[in-house]
Length: 140
Image (cartoon, rainbow, N blue to C red; front, side, top):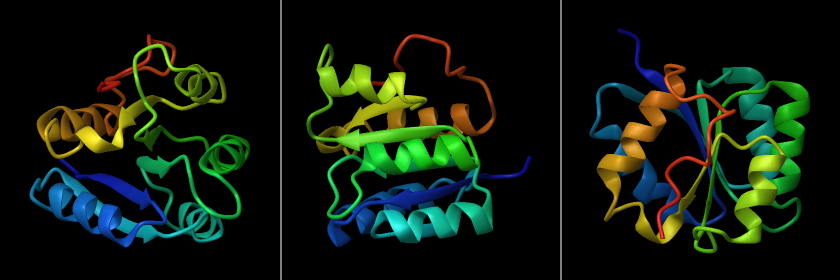
């Protein structure tokens, strides 16, 4: 089975490295690109056509929600929005989901909930989770 191809977008070098290291441990996932801002992300997504994108909400310049809008207009693919603001019932979750995010995940919980995070990426990449479902994998 082909690995799920993913692009990671975050302005923090530490977070990008942590996510990349975590995902590279799973042979069923291939990190095909890492972007530090929205412009890099859009170029990479156009070029690589990933199965899944993880996207930080708070970034300088265009924030993650603006980039999400561009992705949905350009090359819709499952996007997991990441932020430490992601909590059950938080307005940012509803806004991200309304704008097309497939899931939202609390960035602070990625390591502790690594199995859940990686499973979500694999499921989204293989089309096993539908965007029409309730918000997926929101870690508090």
